Amino acid sequence: MEPVVRRVAAATTQVSAPTNSAAITTAYSVTDPNAPAALPSNNEPSSIESSMSDAQVKLIKFVETQIAKMNEHLLFNGQQPTISQLNQALSEYEGILFGLTSLYEMVRWDAVEASDIYDDWVARKSIMIRDQVNPANVAASKWYSAKEIEWLVISRFGDERAKLLANKRLAEHEKSTVERLVEGWKSYGFILNQLSANARAELQGSGLHVDTDYDETD
Image 1: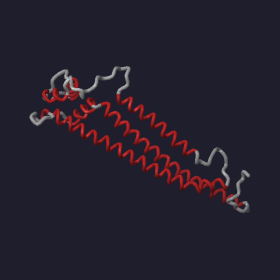
Image 2 (image 1 turned 30 degrees about the horizontal axis):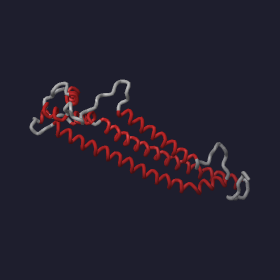
Image 3 (image 1 turned 45 degrees about the vertical axis):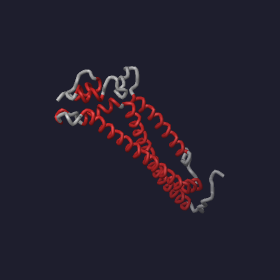
Image 4 (image 1 turned 135 degrees about the vertical axis):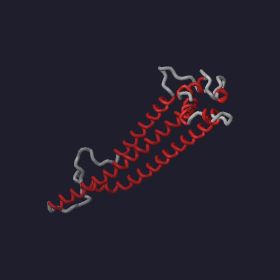
């Protein structure tokens, strides 16, 4: 069997005829509008680089937006919070956690959907290429392997694949971001409870009445 790289190169460029040349020539005719596009020059980004770069820009914007929203609800700004501030933060805690949970479920759905769309696309294109390069009238010993077919799909449908793969990666990282925000918010809730308990213990130890409506800043 021919080396994998040389066989795939032959199938995509028609430089040399592979063993099952009739099938490959039909599938990748020079005049075929669906034939692989010319490779970009060294100074031009590939389709995968461009798509991933665009996805990264969207991810950065998403992360910055979510962090900014979280910062709006954080109590600490380098100062010691008062009892009333702690109580206010604790009273708002559950509502914000519910909002984060809702956001997490939405991005989790998007991640699963993007993965399913990509997997479905790969399956359909792989079957199409397999049927073209591995016809029934050619001996199975001369058929292209699954890895060779995968490379042919990438070569022939590079632009389309790059966009779907970038969408999949973006959805995965958005999900990962929200997961970390939820974990961080739960840790923040634990800290709030600890600070509240410590503040009450200090006031009770000093013999002062704990007035939850009292604001030390007044």
